[in-house]
Amino acid sequence: MGTKGTQRVRRGMRADRVARIGMIAALYAATTLVAILFLGGLAWGPVQFRISEALCVLALFTSDAIPGLALGCALANAANIVLGGTGMLGLLDVVFGSIATAVGAAITWRLRSRPAVAVLGPVVANALIVPAYLPLMVAGMGFYTIPFTSISLEGSYPLMYLFGLVTTGLGEAVVLYALGLPLAHALKASPLPEQLAERDEDAEGTAAPARSSRDVGGGRR
Image 1: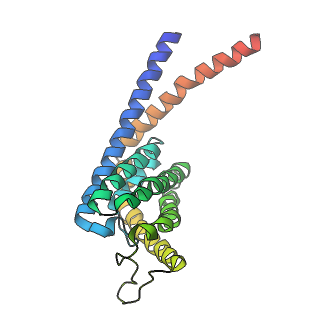
Image 2 (image 1 turned 30 degrees about the vertical axis):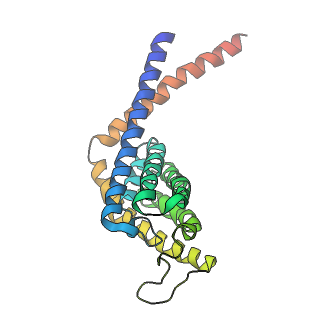
Image 3 (image 1 turned 90 degrees about the vertical axis):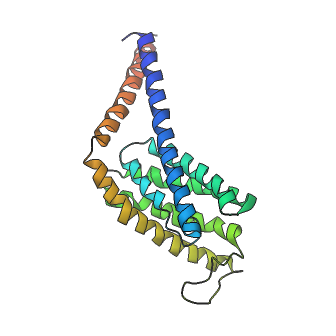
């Protein structure tokens, strides 16, 4: 294939990747907003069951899920500034919530050969990162009262963080293992994984000849 042909293929692969990332982002954002509308604080507070996190299993099939999920999380959390009434402090969720999602998805992609272990990535990332900033966002809103008791942890950041670490981690684990893994098994039985794998291989294949050509040229000089 000539240089112009290779460049056309690369542009096509880039457009394909952008489209995939955009679709994943839109799917995650839409699912999150539905969860926020129907579950309220249970979709974003310290005790949360964000059902859209089940989509993190898409990172078992394509690396494009990493930026796609992170972008979708940023969009959904930005919308929640209005829907959840968190005000400008909601920007913490936009930034750090998206980082947690990206880190979790990256771990899932890296460990994709072992799905049951791989989905621990989002569980651990969200359990460690999200509770670190949530106390700043939702202080005084009653989220840090221990369930089924009247014991409030408000005013003690270490206790609020530990509470969030446990509850966020448990909620994430329930979503990933009860919804995410069955979703992954269903997707595995569809043509989707094979199609994504072929596209990823094509993308890598177009880059390889270019690197090889430069290496050979360097040797001649």
